[in-house]
Amino acid sequence: MPKRNRRQAGRPHHTLKNLLAQPPAPLYEQPSLYWCGQEIEIEHFLRVTDFAPERIQVSTRKGTLTITGDALVLTALEKGRALIRGRFLKIEFSYQ
Image (tube, rainbow, N blue to C red; front, side, top):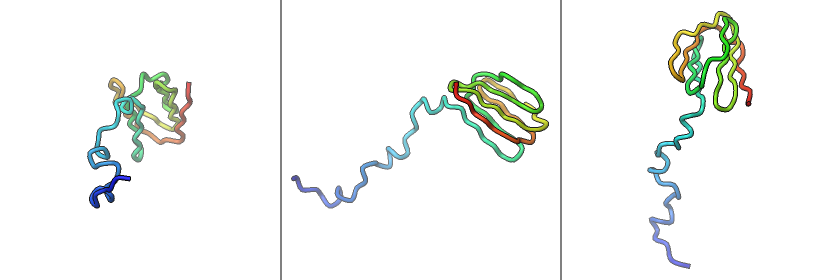
């Protein structure tokens, strides 16, 4: 068995460079949901499929995201990004 240097013996297998590396590209295509108080931001979805003051539904590559609540308002809508305000009661995701 080859001798190991004392410095190498205590060195972790993963370097700092690997720990701080950018995640793989497919990770950025996954839907993201940020909820803060009475505001939800959804990113990386395909389209809004249903919109009513009590329910907003969006389609993603993997399934459907449904947000249920009271007085829901779609305050911003851009390609792949939506901002919803209101009183949220339930968030559901169903796989296709």
